[in-house]
Length: 170
Image (cartoon, rainbow, N blue to C red; front, side):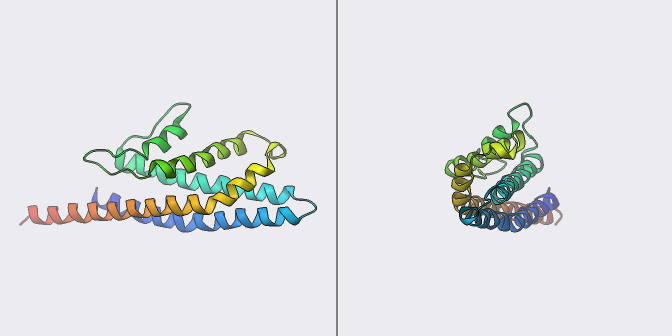
């Protein structure tokens, strides 16, 4: 468990570093779309980056569910259940990963990601893409802060485990 937690903490940090540019790119694509005579390619780019933003967070949530909780939701609504699971404090295992406020903000991106995957881009609503791109920085900052705090928890748990293992051998 010691090594798994330390590795997971580092994976969380790395994933967040890789996700940060997606939020900025989505916002830039929307800004260009507003002044473009052909906004659709830019809105498609924004939608793709917003999709990637949430998909990356979901990879982190899956890793936490698998490595720490030992349980990844299944079934037709597993994506939504996984987001809910991240709001739970699991007694004796871990604190909540996300606050309810952050999870509610991310639920908007979960829903949008589903729409991007299920619909043709010609059916995406430009106003919705703009709303989500405008709010993405705040949602990312909240989620990032909470995930970094969770990574710190993992490192502390790994260090405590290592320390108690060292003491047991003495």
